[in-house]
Image 1 (cartoon, rainbow, N blue to C red):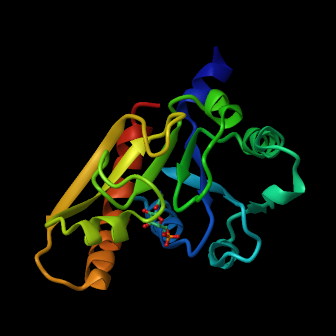
Image 2 (cartoon, protein in one colour; image 1 turned 90 degrees about the vertical axis):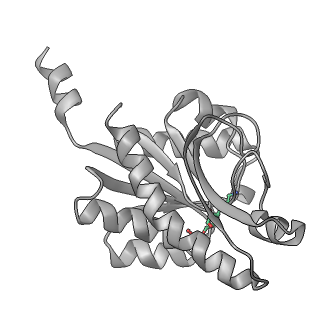
Length: 198
Ligand code: GAR
């Protein structure tokens, strides 16, 4: 009984998965470190040892595990290795933040309803890796950001939070800047709301 209540009361541990620059990693980490998210960023999982997000993790003294998918014979094999790292670190929630790989069944089954993603468009519109470009080229006037649980489909799964803004200009970079601004607000808010239910 005592160990069950310890488990329920302890601060939750988050792992962030990222592949590139890591500005959302930075925003989530900042929110944890200043108390806006009531959890600890315990681990960074990165599929690119050259990614700048690793420098961010080092600076903030957050442990990281970098792997190369090429070193494994299958997605199942590298996801099994990831699961082991997650278990060693008592991870309660996974936040994908610019992790440019499709998550497979090994991770999905081990962390059912515990993997969030941030996407730079208003899902279900503009799925995929070029969402901002696609929305801009399509000529939409309402852009936005989605935080959602992932499932086995690309950019599918239950939506947790969305925020939209109107843009009538013709500068794609302005749109990207605004999207990032929203991401840095929305992701910490959404993570906090989910943590309360875990
Ligand atoms: C973010 O804009 C995120 O929404 C997007 O990658 C960017 C990562 O930036 N994710 C996707 O497009 C997922 N389909 P960051 O590395 O600076 O956080």
